[in-house]
Length: 109
Image (cartoon, rainbow, N blue to C red; front, top):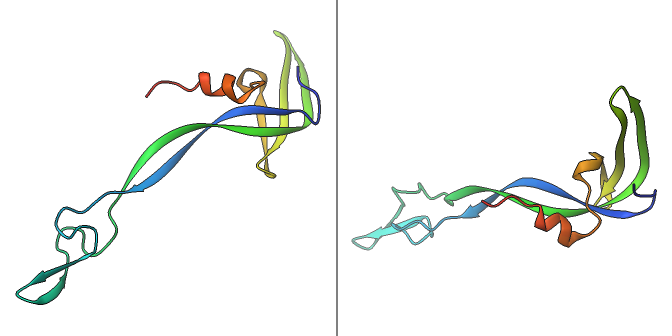
């Protein structure tokens, strides 16, 4: 069990957009034909992006312990703040003492 005020680590999955190069215009959004500039027909002049799922370790400062007696025993959850903003509630099994321990629990792609 961790104390109020302790910094622990949790795993966060987020979606990251990454630029993908347009082979037709070189990601400029424009093509030149016979000296005249046109909008790229492949990407329509828009930045082409891809989306990937990424899991990272993120620190959480514990603000409150939530302890509940159940038929199966005691359930412990932690209420905390990550990155100095926004509250989060984490079950005991998803809390790690160190960043290294959290990163070791990241599932392989």
